[in-house]
Image (cartoon, rainbow, N blue to C red; front, side, top):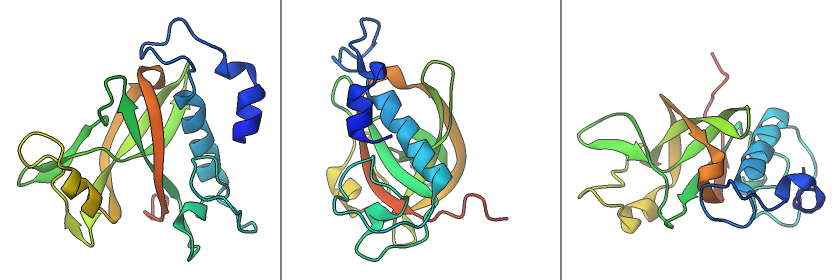
Length: 174
C-alpha cells in the first residue's frame, strides 16, 4: 500500500481513542505496509525515492548496493518523543534495543515484534550505558542480528515509526 493509497483510505481517519494523542493513527498502517513488503520481498526495478517506509521492494533502503533482504529494520517513538525500547537476552548489560522487525499483525493493530540486536560490525552495542539512551552509541549501530526475544505491542500507542535499513537476517533460513 503506497502512502498515497493510505492517505485516501478510511484507515487514516482521526481516531478519538488513539492513546498517543496523535491526530492520525498511521503507525499501524506503516507497520502493516512493512510486513507486506517483507512478505513479498521480490525483485523489481529500483525506485527513485529510498527514504521512507513505503519503498518497495524489500532491499530498496539498502541502496546503492541492492542486496537480498528479509527484514526492514525500524524504530517506534512513544508519545513523549522517546524511542520505544525492549529487552533481548544479552550479556554484560547489553540487552536493550530500540530496533525491531515485524513478525505478525493481528486484531486491531496489535503486532508481534522481534527485538533486533544492535551491532557495530559484529560487536553488540550498549545503547543504554548509564541507564539512558546514548545517541553516540545509537549512531554507531551499522548492523543488526536477530534475537529470540519478541514483544507484543498495541501500535495505537506510538506516534512515529522510522525505517532504518533493509537487511538480511536469515530469519527463514534453517
